[in-house]
Length: 199
Ligand code: SF4
Ligand code: SF4
Image 1 (cartoon, helix red, strand yellow):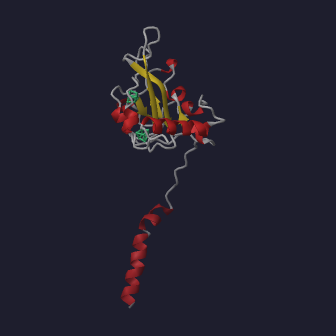
Image 2: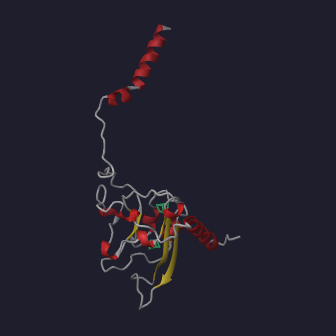
Image 3: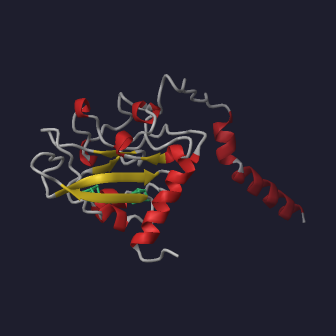
C-alpha cells in the first residue's frame, strides 16, 4: 500500500517535471506590436500575388490554385490580354482574384499548384477585423503594388517578419465592406454556378 502511494507521488512529480522546470525561468516578454515574434522559416501567413520585374502580373488566370484549394477559398476569373491592355506575359490574366482568408487553412497547396510562382504565402499574420467580408482579399490587397517590387519567392523569404508587416492588412479592401458578407456569398455562388450545382 505504502509502496503504491510512493509510486503515485513519484509519478505526479515526474508529470510535473516540465512545469517545475519552467516555473522559475525568466519569461520572454515581447513588446508586440512594436517588436514582432520571429516565425519559423516555412510559416504560412497572408497571401501575396507577385509581379515580374517589368511590372507584369505573374498570374495568368489559369485557375489551378482554385482547383487545388481544398477549402474552396479561392475564386479566379481569367480574361484575355489584349495588345492595348497586357497585364501578364501569358494569353490570360486574372481579371478577378479573391481569397477568403476565413476559409483558408493555410496549407500552401495554391502556392504549390501555381505554375508561375504568382501566389505565395507570406509570413504576415496581422489580418484581424470585425467583419467577415473584410477577410475576402481581392487583387487590390493581394497583388504587390506596382511600386512595391515583385514580392518574395517562397525560397527567398526572410526567416522572420518582413519590414512591411501589416501594410497589406491595413489597406482597406475594395470589396464592399458594408456588404462584405455578400462578397463572400458571391464567391461561393460563383463556384456553385461554375460547378453546375446552382439551384
Ligand atoms: S493556403 Fe490552402 S486553403 Fe488557403 S487558399 Fe491556398 S490552397 Fe486554399
Ligand atoms: S495564381 Fe497561379 S495557379 Fe492561380 S490562377 Fe494565377 S497563375 Fe494560375
